[in-house]
Image 1 (tube, rainbow, N blue to C red):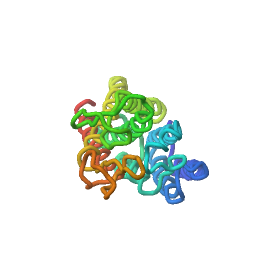
Image 2: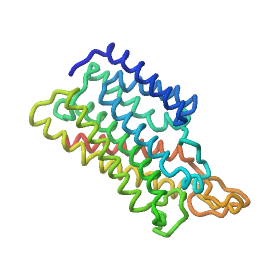
Image 3: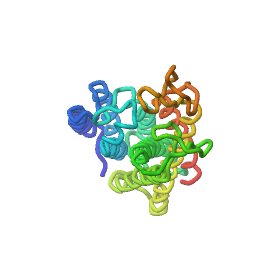
Image 4: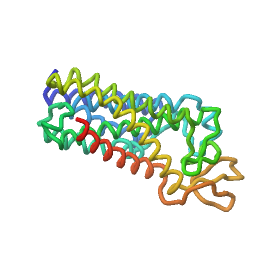
Length: 288
């Protein structure tokens, strides 16, 4: 199903406006996040319906999971916001790299959706692989965080495997890691299903597209692990005796748990997404 960029632009503006406004009203995004979300969503859907679908699957599932168990999360998360409200910085940290990649990929392909096929173009395959890795990482990290904190199991610091308090950066649980794997799989399935309608492949190439599912699943898990390692080492975690919660900044009433105060949560997310996108793009060239 081939559509013109002009049609996709009109569709993108309409659907992005509706979703951004709805997300703002439901407090999934603040005003700045709504504006940024509208812009990146418009870019994705104009580039191709498959790219827009990847963004939507990440955003909608993550927004839904953020609201699951809010009472429990409120007791643990010092930065808890009603509805998990995100601002423009968080939106761009989670979709900025992919926005650049989809524009470059579509410029090279003449704004047509392509299959993962290194024989046709290694650069385009690497770019598409990077986009898959990007959203697998975003989805994996979010599902892992939002579901892992609800687990009854005590998290363990990924660098030492010692038990830590819930909310500690770099703390992992089995439930969280399985959630990351499932989140990556969801992104891979979305890529594959929408590709059936938007991209035309030769039979041998079409069969290999199935490998996007395990690749995306591993990217989701890998992205979550990278995020946890960064969180445990270059992001500060400490227990505040006054607030009785784990906090992300040193202070006179804060006892250090792990990490040094170099990056905040947005910085860690950005770096983990960048690394996962790069690794997945390289893997895609060799696999496809």
